[in-house]
Length: 147
Length: 175
Image 1 (cartoon, rainbow over the protein chains, first blue to last red):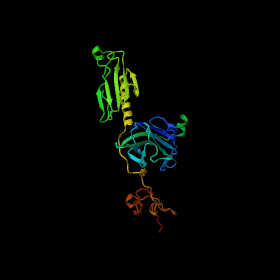
Image 2 (cartoon, rainbow over the protein chains, first blue to last red):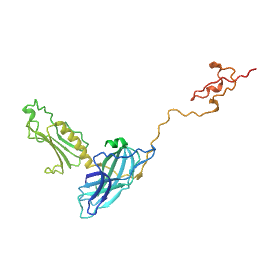
Image 3 (cartoon, each protein chain N blue to C red):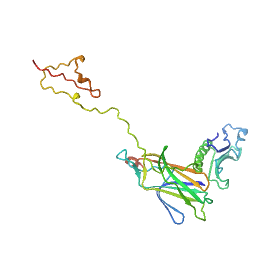
Image 4 (cartoon, rainbow over the protein chains, first blue to last red):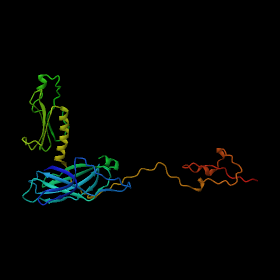
């Protein structure tokens, strides 16, 4: 098993023929999201929609897959989704897509670097963690105009 | 130059430092087609660097990223005569491969949203609380406006330590 893609977008959807529809794909390793500063400093800012798409390869021989998504900010864990197990139907394709949708996504720590970590375990193999970071950056109206 | 890699990775060979302006034939002999190989811990990915044509002053580095020994179809290929560019490619590609193969992990029992409250910085000075002792007495019939010396200050004027107290002399009634 290996990681093929680890993508962030605004919306993602599984199609019937195994394809994925993505809307608002964030390019690059570091994603900057436009978000106005909160009027109250202690308020939790949110992103209305954030989807994380993970595509795993070398999956022909994998019959069952257990996976869990965690989000970290620095060393602090800010979000963890319950582990799930899926049984892969036959005939088995070489790829497995996993979609994680957050509507909204709570940015509990405000602006900064968030690390998405997905832990997967195939059949009798040891768990493996793949991670990807993205940055939430507050952009003022001046900097938005510059772009 | 030996690239920095994680534990379990294998590094074979090195990148020779050759100054082409002063290189002799023996220096150029260091540049062969099998200079450096970096193999990840899972033995799936290989970074291969060679000099083509070997020992030629007009040659260049050819860097390839190979998966599962599929040498016919490299995932990446870079051709350059700049040694620094090769060094940067190796460092970046090692990080990319580390992200692709992942790292040993474990599932978490903690499920949910965890909010860490940021504490505000403490104020530098406490706000003074007004008390009758710190109020300025009103002088309605000034008889003696001379300030007394420090030794004759009334006791209540020394109580407040956070707010400067304006001292007014106590009223004196004419006999």
